[in-house]
Image 1 (cartoon, rainbow, N blue to C red):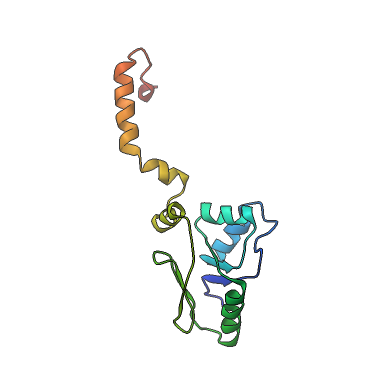
Image 2 (cartoon, rainbow, N blue to C red):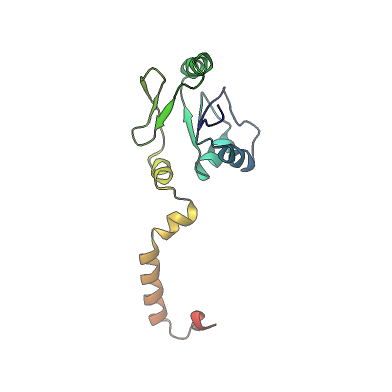
Length: 143
Protein backbone atom coordinates (compact mmCIF):
# COMPACT_ATOMS: atom_id res chain seq x y z
CA UNK A 1 0.00 0.00 0.00
CA UNK A 2 3.03 2.31 -0.16
CA UNK A 3 1.68 4.12 -3.23
CA UNK A 4 -1.91 4.27 -1.97
CA UNK A 5 -3.78 7.55 -2.35
CA UNK A 6 -7.05 6.35 -0.83
CA UNK A 7 -7.36 5.41 2.83
CA UNK A 8 -10.34 3.31 3.93
CA UNK A 9 -10.98 3.89 7.64
CA UNK A 10 -13.39 3.15 10.44
CA UNK A 11 -16.14 5.20 12.05
CA UNK A 12 -15.43 8.64 13.50
CA UNK A 13 -12.07 8.83 11.76
CA UNK A 14 -10.00 11.81 12.89
CA UNK A 15 -11.90 12.18 16.15
CA UNK A 16 -9.76 14.24 18.51
CA UNK A 17 -7.66 15.71 15.68
CA UNK A 18 -8.19 19.42 16.13
CA UNK A 19 -5.01 20.46 14.34
CA UNK A 20 -4.30 20.61 10.63
CA UNK A 21 -1.20 18.51 11.28
CA UNK A 22 -3.22 15.30 11.05
CA UNK A 23 -4.37 16.25 7.55
CA UNK A 24 -0.87 17.44 6.55
CA UNK A 25 0.57 14.08 7.65
CA UNK A 26 -1.89 12.17 5.45
CA UNK A 27 -1.19 14.48 2.50
CA UNK A 28 2.57 14.13 3.01
CA UNK A 29 2.16 10.35 2.93
CA UNK A 30 0.36 10.68 -0.43
CA UNK A 31 -3.21 10.15 0.75
CA UNK A 32 -5.71 12.26 -1.22
CA UNK A 33 -9.00 10.65 -0.10
CA UNK A 34 -10.20 9.16 3.17
CA UNK A 35 -13.29 6.96 3.00
CA UNK A 36 -15.08 6.33 6.29
CA UNK A 37 -18.61 6.02 7.69
CA UNK A 38 -18.09 9.21 9.74
CA UNK A 39 -15.43 11.75 10.65
CA UNK A 40 -14.54 13.96 13.57
CA UNK A 41 -16.10 17.33 12.77
CA UNK A 42 -12.94 19.41 13.04
CA UNK A 43 -10.88 16.84 11.18
CA UNK A 44 -13.40 16.81 8.31
CA UNK A 45 -13.37 20.62 8.12
CA UNK A 46 -9.56 20.60 8.09
CA UNK A 47 -9.58 18.01 5.30
CA UNK A 48 -11.78 20.16 3.10
CA UNK A 49 -9.81 23.31 3.93
CA UNK A 50 -6.50 21.68 3.01
CA UNK A 51 -7.32 19.66 -0.11
CA UNK A 52 -8.00 16.19 1.29
CA UNK A 53 -11.33 14.67 0.27
CA UNK A 54 -13.31 13.03 3.09
CA UNK A 55 -15.89 10.61 1.67
CA UNK A 56 -18.73 9.32 3.84
CA UNK A 57 -20.18 5.95 2.88
CA UNK A 58 -22.36 3.51 4.83
CA UNK A 59 -20.41 1.50 7.39
CA UNK A 60 -21.20 -1.86 5.78
CA UNK A 61 -19.90 -0.63 2.42
CA UNK A 62 -16.74 0.82 3.97
CA UNK A 63 -16.11 -2.53 5.67
CA UNK A 64 -16.66 -4.36 2.37
CA UNK A 65 -14.19 -2.03 0.61
CA UNK A 66 -11.65 -2.59 3.37
CA UNK A 67 -12.11 -6.38 3.23
CA UNK A 68 -11.66 -6.37 -0.54
CA UNK A 69 -8.47 -4.30 -0.29
CA UNK A 70 -7.10 -6.66 2.37
CA UNK A 71 -7.98 -9.75 0.36
CA UNK A 72 -6.51 -8.37 -2.88
CA UNK A 73 -3.37 -6.30 -2.17
CA UNK A 74 -2.60 -4.09 -5.14
CA UNK A 75 -6.23 -3.84 -6.18
CA UNK A 76 -7.34 -0.39 -7.28
CA UNK A 77 -10.05 1.61 -5.57
CA UNK A 78 -10.67 4.98 -7.20
CA UNK A 79 -12.67 8.11 -6.55
CA UNK A 80 -14.26 10.31 -9.19
CA UNK A 81 -14.92 13.65 -7.51
CA UNK A 82 -16.67 15.32 -10.48
CA UNK A 83 -19.09 12.36 -10.67
CA UNK A 84 -19.13 11.95 -6.87
CA UNK A 85 -18.52 8.22 -6.98
CA UNK A 86 -16.20 5.70 -5.40
CA UNK A 87 -15.35 2.96 -7.89
CA UNK A 88 -14.76 -0.31 -6.05
CA UNK A 89 -12.25 -2.91 -7.20
CA UNK A 90 -15.10 -4.81 -8.89
CA UNK A 91 -15.95 -1.72 -10.97
CA UNK A 92 -19.17 -0.89 -9.14
CA UNK A 93 -19.64 2.85 -8.58
CA UNK A 94 -20.94 3.99 -5.20
CA UNK A 95 -22.26 7.58 -5.00
CA UNK A 96 -21.34 9.99 -2.23
CA UNK A 97 -22.47 13.49 -1.33
CA UNK A 98 -20.38 16.64 -1.02
CA UNK A 99 -21.28 20.31 -0.76
CA UNK A 100 -21.18 21.89 -4.23
CA UNK A 101 -18.88 24.75 -3.19
CA UNK A 102 -16.45 22.39 -1.41
CA UNK A 103 -16.42 20.19 -4.51
CA UNK A 104 -15.63 23.18 -6.73
CA UNK A 105 -12.81 24.27 -4.44
CA UNK A 106 -11.26 20.80 -4.37
CA UNK A 107 -11.51 20.33 -8.14
CA UNK A 108 -9.92 23.74 -8.78
CA UNK A 109 -7.38 23.38 -5.97
CA UNK A 110 -8.55 26.59 -4.30
CA UNK A 111 -7.82 27.65 -0.75
CA UNK A 112 -9.19 30.81 0.86
CA UNK A 113 -6.59 32.99 -0.88
CA UNK A 114 -7.41 31.34 -4.21
CA UNK A 115 -11.11 32.08 -3.66
CA UNK A 116 -10.28 35.73 -3.00
CA UNK A 117 -8.08 35.91 -6.10
CA UNK A 118 -11.01 34.79 -8.24
CA UNK A 119 -12.38 38.27 -7.56
CA UNK A 120 -9.13 40.08 -8.39
CA UNK A 121 -10.56 42.04 -11.36
CA UNK A 122 -13.48 43.29 -9.23
CA UNK A 123 -11.13 44.16 -6.35
CA UNK A 124 -8.83 46.10 -8.68
CA UNK A 125 -11.78 47.94 -10.23
CA UNK A 126 -13.05 48.87 -6.76
CA UNK A 127 -9.60 50.12 -5.74
CA UNK A 128 -9.30 52.29 -8.87
CA UNK A 129 -12.77 53.76 -8.35
CA UNK A 130 -12.22 54.26 -4.63
CA UNK A 131 -8.84 55.99 -5.08
CA UNK A 132 -10.27 58.32 -7.72
CA UNK A 133 -13.13 59.29 -5.38
CA UNK A 134 -11.04 59.69 -2.22
CA UNK A 135 -8.09 61.69 -3.55
CA UNK A 136 -6.80 62.72 -0.13
CA UNK A 137 -5.65 59.14 0.63
CA UNK A 138 -1.90 58.66 0.24
CA UNK A 139 -0.74 56.64 -2.71
CA UNK A 140 0.17 53.45 -0.87
CA UNK A 141 2.00 52.03 -3.89
CA UNK A 142 4.67 54.74 -3.58
CA UNK A 143 5.29 54.19 0.15
